[in-house]
Image (cartoon, rainbow, N blue to C red; front, side):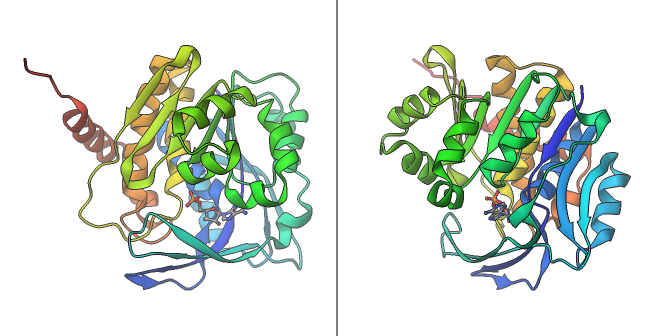
Length: 307
Ligand code: AMP
């Protein structure tokens, strides 16, 4: 099953109560590509960077079988830059700087051999670019998953609503779900958002897990793994989405039962991401590391109710 990923490939700077980074590799699609490539071998990336980017990172994606022929390199231009600062609880953060740079006029060109993918992950990017990408595919994919953030709700809500009519699954955090729906209750928010287009909604709640809402009021909850060390939550949402769609693409499924397992994969994958700054930990894990975490999830979630 072919899996096409688009999203930001970027430089980030991150401040947490435990320290700050200088410029490091980040971006939604960077995290997604790392996560999906651990689960699936037919992944293609469409993104844009400036001449200043760290091309060793791109080589590391190629070594993991990610096809980067859809990555545009803009001569004389700068890569997207994001600077975030986490609060003491690490569950909330402020964006200090967003410099769109090459993303400002990104025209997503889909390589011909990627024009008909079965699975599509529209990572965080302008909703206009997400929509253009879908319009450029030659056939309707089996599954389209979209991730976005409050930044785009603030400046491009109409475009976001337009692309939402064309996706199957939306992943957002609880604060964003409330902003998008105007509802405080997440159950009501899920109803309102699902009426906007996506049949399935995943609401990420950071260290408090993730909720899955599907057809016929089907609901599922997956906790986050309690971790001793959380250094940097940046990219956890993207990693989660990558684990989610990576599992579905490797299983060739899109049904609700498979999605329940997929959010456990996403949560397990995200639990690695937060343990070190940036992409470092995610880039170093193996399939057996992941399997060990999946076992931890099984024991965390497997409870019986005794009469
Ligand atoms: P997450 O922590 O999963 O929400 O994702 C963090 C990543 O999103 C960082 O690596 C940033 O480079 C990227 N990012 C932040 N703001 C934007 C934006 N407006 N558009 C696209 N990507 C962004």
